[in-house]
Image (cartoon, rainbow, N blue to C red; front, side):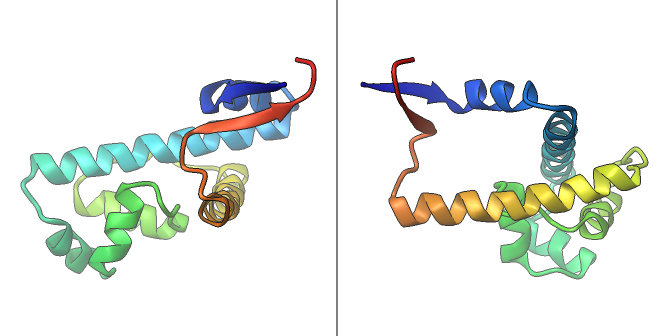
Length: 130
């Protein structure tokens, strides 16, 4: 019998596995928070994605993918975008920078798997007697 696990439940289960996983997840949560702040600031300042992208030296479609969490940018790109909308980012240590890279790579794998399987529903199936 299939048991459905929500993404939130999976996230909490992953955090509980070990300290490195927990730190990676907490770093990704921090990145998500930063991206949300950037998007909110851009809207509040009434700046279009096109104008912000031009100001930051990136393409508008890339900024759109960042704002919709379809890609996780490199840390220097994230800082550059944040500075363009006057968002202060706390200093990230080397472990957090490394974790951002890992999260970016994991996001690519998950997105590719999602597209390949056609599963966009936010649930992961667990098989077993749970």
